[in-house]
Amino acid sequence: MLKIENVCKQFQGVKAVNELSFSVEKGQIFGVIGPNGAGKTTLFNLISGSFKPDSGAIYFNGRNSTKMKCYTLCKSGIGRTYQVVKPFASLSVLENVMVGAFNTITSKEDVLKYAMSILTKVGLQKKATYIGSSLTLAEKKRMEIARALATKPKLLLLDEVMAGLNTSEVKELLPLVLTLRDEGMTIVIIEHIMEVVMTICDHIVVINYGQKIAEGCPREVANHPEVIKAYFGEEMTIA
Ligand SMILES: Nc1ncnc2c1ncn2[C@@H]1O[C@H](COP(=O)(O)OP(=O)(O)OP(=O)(O)O)[C@@H](O)[C@H]1O
Image 1: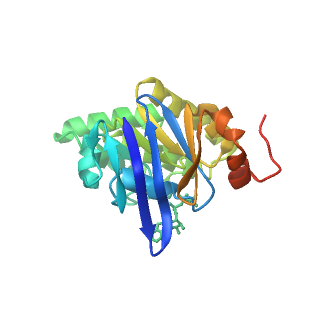
Image 2 (image 1 turned 45 degrees about the vertical axis):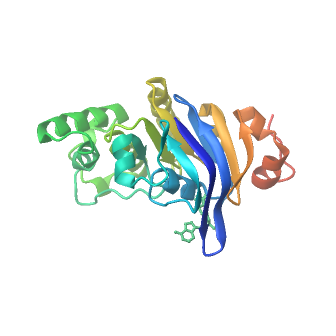
């Protein structure tokens, strides 16, 4: 579904993404983890077309998508959320989601129906008429997912959707992500909460200073010496 091939992206001498390669299989929840500044969000910006790599190639659904514009990639099935949620503050929750639905649907009536069905899916149907900015953080995160889902993605990039949520809010959001995967969505998730990563991911890539330092199933990466050193601290091991 997604192939990253020797991708590099540099900012004024900082190698944010450095010779990175990995593949995401269809139907996986694929975790991207690494310390702060490791290059995770830059990677999402490259996959979704906001940034172009300095070198290397990205393939989405078998097509070379390296030079595609972000709106073309969105139309071809890449949806994403942002680490910092930025709803259209003056629009209602429903209208926020409708914006995403116009990606593939033209009739306003159909957009409205589809956006409402997505709101129901994420559990925000009762908040449809609320102003986007009035939601709690947990609700805004759900709206962020809804806006991405409304574009009808085949590949969903989730950038720290659990960040800032309390334990019970995280527990409430997890089933939604798992349901999406069970319905056939391929998901790449950046997440700092290790419990979440270890619980829901089928496969994980760990990056540090833009480079891949480990890859495998949750247990494999958690016990990888490089990961323990770079991410968890030298003294820590995970059973
Ligand atoms: N637009 C930009 N201009 C200049 N430097 C940037 C830009 N975007 C990212 N960087 C730098 O690239 C490196 C990787 O940043 P990035 O945000 O991708 O890391 P991250 O792994 O997502 O971090 P975090 O976990 O803190 O969100 C950092 O050193 C960052 O300062």
